[in-house]
Length: 445
Ligand SMILES: Nc1ncnc2c1ncn2[C@@H]1O[C@H](COP(=O)(O)OP(=O)(O)OP(=O)(O)O)[C@@H](O)[C@H]1O
Image 1 (cartoon, rainbow, N blue to C red):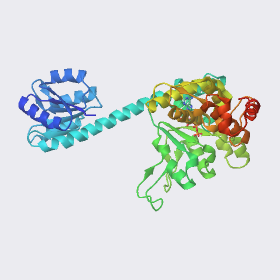
Image 2: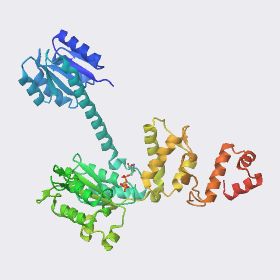
Image 3: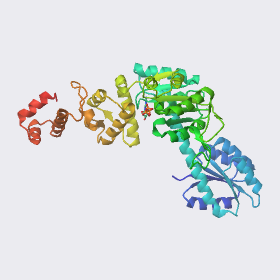
Image 4: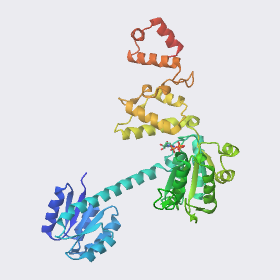
């Protein structure tokens, strides 16, 4: 995608020369002879980079670059200064311009500089888009579900969000603990400040300590420079510590100190560092049992347990499955450039019979796979993984390794293939027609 450049200069000849050079690079170029007409174009068009002369009939380009940046912060301005007038260029940069060019002297510099400015604009646009997505994604409104269990958890989380209290989120893997942590942060006073997440089970003890608390240069062989830990990166914001139950005891002591005094000591440092950070912790372990086994500090447990919210497993809120499924199907269809897909009744039934040990994450992945497999505009049972296909009301959840389940599913598939022609199906299965009828009855096909 080519960017759009606006040239503001009252010298028509120079404008058209620059226009020619820039157009050859693939940019769209618009022109203005003064600030007034430039302003009209800026208000109407989506401009990426402005090339602006300093001496304009109705004002100074140096001053105008400030106005432009205030009104359109993601756009970049390059100021065109007169020969030998570096102070103008310096002032323009102070006013927020990307850079300056000396008119007539720097023609071969125009394109490289313009390309750099445009890259910055693209990056800025991408960041804005992502920020918007994240902001939308993680609010209590975007947590789907009407079941009592999830509504209670949302109500508790919305109450504690503005209170700045430490929160402990309990729940199996994939139940949405991180989504809740982000939503709490986004509706707290700390929204707009950093939200930093760390999975404590993903690191060795040493790495976890330096990731979390940072280190001083020289603390160990590869520590050539001071490094801020994530707790410091999260200053004035929130840190989300996932799988806290996995944190070694000595680091738990350091964390307790942060909770009590707002201070910690970096690896290799002698003096404490102060932070103002809200801690949201999560675990799928039974912390009380860990305390009894001596694996989790009792004082930290009580400190964290002041406000605990339990997130229900998906199998305890099956009512929410259709709405969640619809949402994930729409997301997956969009990502895969597919039009909207509908679930058949049998498909929804199978979803509701499954155990969902991986909870919402598993549901999301199963549906993404189904969307990819579906050729038509309907999601069918055959688009589900094997163990979901064989789940059945009478037998409850069957194992994918159960021989009868495999046989049943195979018969279903063959019957589907023969469009329910039993004689043909029996032939393909290499069994007698009577045997097929018996199996159909036995398996309640
Ligand atoms: N209520 C919800 N609505 C929409 N998407 C959700 C919801 N809850 C969770 N998700 C999605 O499900 C996935 C798992 O959520 P999340 O990472 O928050 O779970 P978790 O409990 O932190 O998992 P783990 O313990 O394994 O880290 C994510 O992709 C998340 O976007």
